[in-house]
Length: 466
Image (cartoon, rainbow, N blue to C red; front, side, top):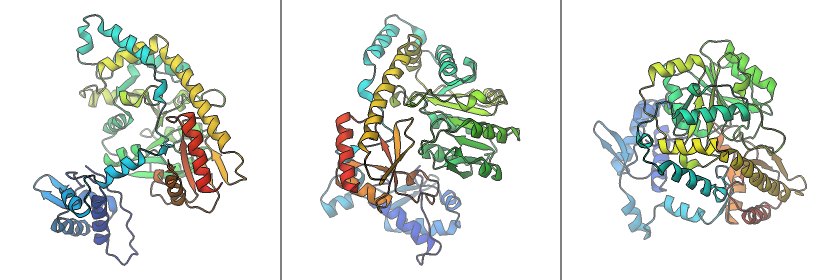
């Protein structure tokens, strides 16, 4: 089901139903909502937008009458097949989305999400894969333990203690196909749908998971030390979702004092918990990696999330979580009937990859690779005469750049695109998007070559005249 994010203006002379109608119609015409996509129910959309259901009913009725969407009994509303109408009108066979993707594929993309796959350890991966398949091991194709394979969970436990200070046993770890899946599983442990406090700006995938599961989201501002605990204490949140080792997207590293304040907040209520998303803590360029928040939790209040998406490859879709004892008991009682979602073969490959020392060597290599790219960008952005401010530059796979040249974020992105460079603004990561007032963008570097970085930075400096 497609999730609609519509910003309504109650002071606008255009009626609310017409604003909803116009938004959905334009999204369909521009190819942003493909045909056959299921739309939210009128009840769900009305609740999400805080409007009456009749307002949404009017908007949907107009869209149905004009043929943009179709109503199917007992199933809901779906986007109609209308691409032929636009093909006839403009003589093109591609949708707007396909054309945009084709255009952007030729750009130098400073995405904060990419990793360097040119350095993937193919030889080691092949060797381990062949070794596992060299004998007729029937167990490889048998069902997995619902928490994940014991050997891999044991390796993860050892690695986390040595690298992150995380204290856990193999039985405390649960594997899943990506962080989004694990967040949805965490929601199963709280049937009363508690309010969730999220750093603002934040990782929007997590935001969508919580909202889709019926949680009320409470945005809490971020300062130079991370989530502002004073605001958290004044909220009615029961769960706080944080990224203390490298906040996304700001790059803030939470100091120990703020971490202890978070723990103190959670200890004041038996049903308060902290979700620590430790998504890219392996890559730090100044000093040693910061110990995880979980390592200072003596009260069983931290749910720890980790992933191999940044450290190995995103395609293996392998993440893990560590539940405190009280929640592990709930998990075993309420959700142990769920099947394991990560391939047993992939689990065994990663287990051997870690046990044989390949993982540690790969991380050391990638730290050097990313540090070189990171230092190159910082060097290329120097000498801007105060027009460029860089932050969040000591860890992770992107930096934050604020440009002081009178251009808005939107204009910075547009000017860069004209020069053949794709830049991503920070405003898209704000809940409500009302707090992003500066001209600030994210510059990712992991997936780019040195030549692409050098060319791309030269192009954006020219486009921005800095």
